[in-house]
View 1 (cartoon, rainbow, N blue to C red):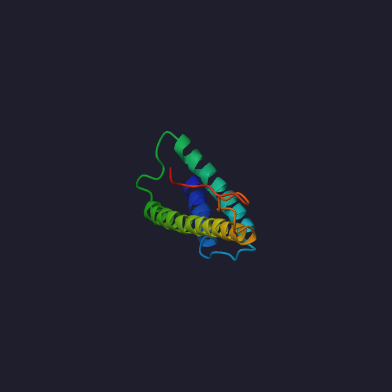
View 2: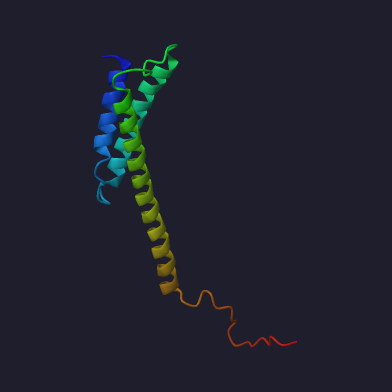
Length: 119
């Protein structure tokens, strides 16, 4: 199989994998699979770039590969945004939990003493 065909197959696998976002329980396996598919696709792209003549230029599959690449990039941004939102939600949850367990942490008063702010 020529390299352009391999690139098309690798891109289609990655695109198909990115079609659905997993639940929280399956996210780690989903990200690992994305990483493996990106590595496989990257190896094929490196082999294509190592050639002296650009095999994609004027190829029949060039337009299809460009559309797949655009779709892959959009879906990777969605996955990244989803992960980023979950991380922000986790940080917010941690902060609110700390405020609940120690509500007086922000208060700067020493026990039994009074500081006069006017001088």
